[in-house]
Image (cartoon, rainbow, N blue to C red; front, side, top):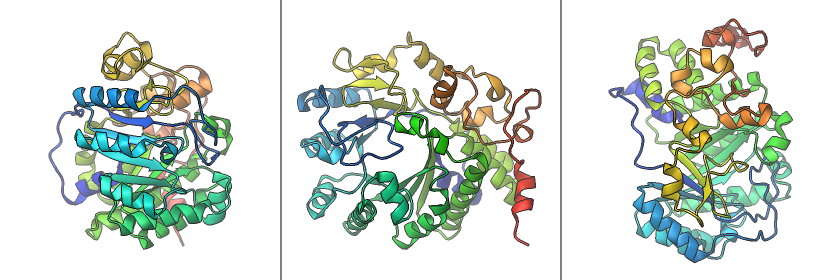
Length: 401
C-alpha cells in the first residue's frame, strides 16, 4: 500500500529519513468467509451467494487470533466474501479488540443497516472500508446488482454519522476510469475519511477480466487526479487520507509528480520513498483465507504457504524454506527484465509479483503492470518495452491551452 497523504505531508513538514523499519508483525487480511451476496467482476476470491464447506469454526478462529497476538501482529482486516454474512463476525471482532488489535472491516456495504452500524460502533471497529466502482450505473454493473450503489453509499453515510472512520475503495479499470473524478468529488462532498485506489491485480475474476485493466496512460491520468486531490487536502490542513494499492510504481510516479512541483524536496522524498521500500507482500502483509490457508497477500490464493489447522500462523510465516516466501523476503529481491535495471527499484521493490506470475508463469519476471516508460526508469536495452510517453513530455502535451 502506498500512503499518498503521508508522503504529501513530507513536502510541507519533512521528517528525518532513516533505514527501513518493518512493523512487529504483518498486517493480516483475513477472509473469514467466502460467501458473498454479490458477484463482482473483479473479485479475487471468486465468491458467490452460497456456503463454502470447510471454513474455520469460531473456536479455530479464536485460536488463530491468540497466535497472531503472541506473534505481535498489529492489525487485522476482517474481510470476505462479505464478512457480515458470517454469524460470529462480531464475536470475532470483540475478541480481537479485547487483545489490542487494530481491527478493520472490509465490506461491500450493501448489508449495513442501522443495527449493523450500532454494533460496529459499539465494538469500536477502527475502520470500515466500503467498495465503490464509480457512478450508480457503473457500480451496479460491476457489482451485478441493481441498487448496490445506493446501499453502499448509504452505509458509508450511516457509518460516518455514527462517528466510525470510513473509507471508499475504488478498483481502477478501463471500464470505470472515467468515473474517478466524479467519485473523488463524491468523497469530498460526503466528508469521507479515506480514499483508496486499487489497481486491478490479476487474480480470481480480476485475472479473467484483466483485458479490462486500465491502460498505462489511463493509469497515469488517474494517479494525477489522486495526487492532486491529496495535495489539496494536505495544503488546506485537512486530515483526509489517500492511499493506493497493488502497483508500487505509484511511489516512483509520485516522485516524478513532486519533483516537477517541488524540486527542492526531490532528494528528501526519494530518501523517504526508499525507506518505505515498496511492495510488502510476504513481508509486512499476509493473508489467511476462509479455509485457513496462509498466502503472501490476498492475490496469491493459488499459492499456499501452509494451513493454520496444521501449523500456527507464526510458524508458517517464519518458515523461509518456502522458495516464494524466501524470495519475497530477500533484500533486494532478485527480479528479472526491466525491473532489474530500473533506477527506481529501491523505491518500488520490483512491484507486484502476482501479475508477473499470472501472465508469464514466473513470479520473478518484470511486472507487466508497471506504467513507467523506459526513459523514465533508465532502461534502454530491451527489445520490447511499454509504449508510453515519458512523464514530463506527456504533461506538456496534455496541458490545457
